[in-house]
Length: 68
Image 1 (cartoon, one colour):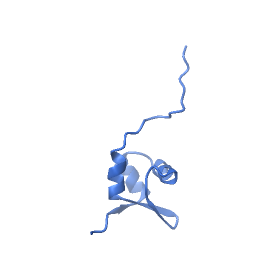
Image 2: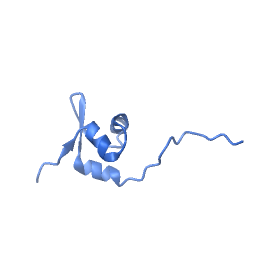
Image 3: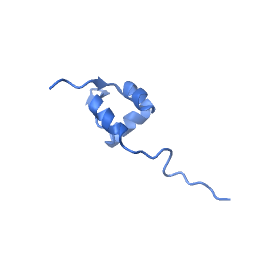
Image 4: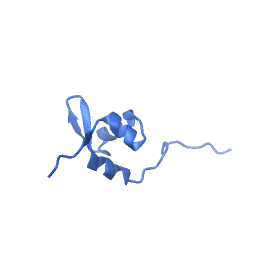
């Protein structure tokens, strides 16, 4: 079985179109799976593909609009 390609948080952020800090938050929360190597994270190509298929709500779900 070939070794999967691994990406840094910065590379993953670019591929997913989100910020690096959001990638790290998703990793800490377990929403995105990766491997912590020292103080760095690596994410497999397979995991990035899996994550791209998940429907995500955009914006802040706790934001409440004031009604006039």
